[in-house]
Amino acid sequence: MEFKPVKIGKHTVRYPIIQGGMGVGISWDRLAGHVSLEGGLGVISSVGTGYYENRAYADKLVANRPLEVENFYSKKALVKIFENARKICGDAPLACNVLYAINDYGRVVADSCEAGADIIITGAGLPTNMPEFTTGYPDVALVPIVSSPKALRLICRRWEKRYGRIPDAVVLEGPLSGGHQGFTYEQCLMEEYQLENLIGPVVQEAAEWGGIPVFAAGGIWDKSDIERCIELGASGVQMGTRFIGTHECDAHNNFKEILLNAKKEDILLLKSPVGYPARGVRTNLIDLVEKREGPAIKCISNCVAPCKRGVEAKEVGYCIADRLSDAYMGDRELGLYFSGSNGYRIEEIISVKELMHRLVHGE
Image 1 (cartoon, helix red, strand yellow):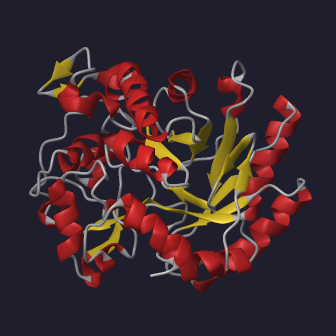
Image 2 (tube, rainbow, N blue to C red):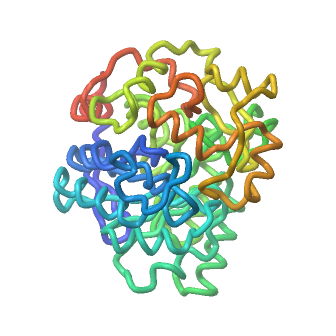
């Protein structure tokens, strides 16, 4: 199958491949810039930008961590990340991923538009008010992440009624993705909630709203996976984990080594302070958390609303902002390393150019 360009709002992406947003600091300027340069859609994660360039853009630190939301989601850092990504990809479409569950969601969406995002992608909740924060940027395409036709229907109805618009595209994420899931733990294991069984119903719902492009995500690995999703009715795919295995990925080399050494059974569903199950790699941190011996929880950054200022973190046994940031800094002992179900399949580190070639032309 020869892949065709896809349109997301007013923006044309050469290949139907979105690189999933990965925070903290896994998909920033280098990865996203090179993916867009090579014809995919590079996605910058807005999570934890206060850690960018050794916290150079965080105005206030406590215990060497960005204090509160304004520093954890640093606008100055996000602007710089986009600036540096643009030096790599020029005027190719470039997106930003903003989690709906974060504190200060509206401000971070507006910051992303101001920084130069062509497309905003939002998951971790139903972004029913997303268009509210992009009114001054009519050319910015809006893409929610959903896990069911019902969720898409709800978003479309709300947006149409309140804002007179519908999503420019939608990402359908199945339960094999890395990080947070839009399903309960039990649903993640059930056949009816697997990606291949969700594509048809979501594409059908998207057709009811004028044919919104659907990008399938979760467990996508190679060209044959992309072809299968397109054959089932998707316009393209979103994939994150395999991009960690590239030289340009912003992740610490220790993160890449952890995946290079991971076995299939090391990748599992974890409890998260965000309230959704999350998929990641079993490391020393997970062993400590299971024994209720994890590091102290202080809630310095106040990163996500569902955590209730550390209440859920204490319940689960770890602070997600601190532990993801530790992974970004390469801490093997206390870092939280998210991965999709295929993370153990990374066997070598290659360039984004080579990976995009394999995805488009086959291995």
